[in-house]
Length: 160
Image (tube, rainbow, N blue to C red; front, side):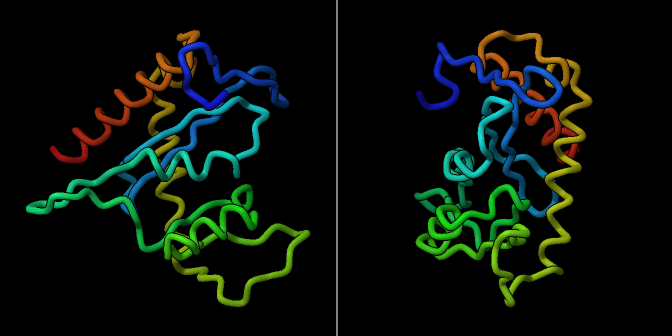
């Protein structure tokens, strides 16, 4: 069953008990653009594609929204051939470090990867919202709605 269906709770076992992962997409300034939820034990690489499909940026004066960034930064959990092939198929540069069991990529851009901290800072900021941090909602759709409200609040603060 795809994530975020009404009957899905996006709860799963992890080291600390039951948990939910937020797969967040931000721009290079840390402005949240989209989010997808998964159970705590689900692998991150399965949610790279849905997370990228969750964003659409309207261009001023153009009919179609932008859906393709120039580059995508991710941590080692997204270092799989399926993710890299998907990004290459869409002509997106993958700025993802290789895992220890993989062959190193000589063209890895460390300078661009350092900007990935914008995502981590945005996640940390979202966790300051009590409803996102403690997850009071039982259903994933309600929790995702609270996460998106926190994202809207973040965008409104950045715009002010």
